[in-house]
Image (cartoon, rainbow, N blue to C red; front, side, top):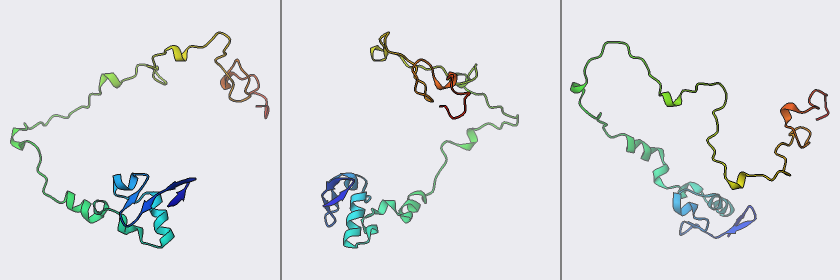
Amino acid sequence: MTQLGGHKWAVNLNERYCQCGQFTTYHYPCSHIIAACGIVSINLYQYIDVVYTNDYILRAYSAQWWPLGNDDVILPFDEPWTLVPDPSFIHDRKGRPRSTWLRNEMDWRLPSQTRYKCGRCGTVGHNWRNCPLQSQQGSC
């Protein structure tokens, strides 16, 4: 059993098992396995799966890659091309985009509840941008 962050987790290094489930899922040592290896002075690299090694990744991408389609079908094009942006991403006004949040009954407030509270002085009724004390040095 290893204890990290106030929780105890069952770890079995011989069976490559940790109760948290991360080691079983990812085949990569979780913090509990690393702590257990440190306690019993075992090299933790033996618990890293072979798929995480550089050699395995290089072999995965070393095969011959063939382009899709046939180059003979592509017509020659000698004119300069221009990039046409997607009109749905063009903003017609400056600043932050308008919110698309749909308000529901969880967002409703009673008339007695005030919406604004200053982040500088903590007073209710205004925000930090129009705080009356912002011009005074050290008051907020």
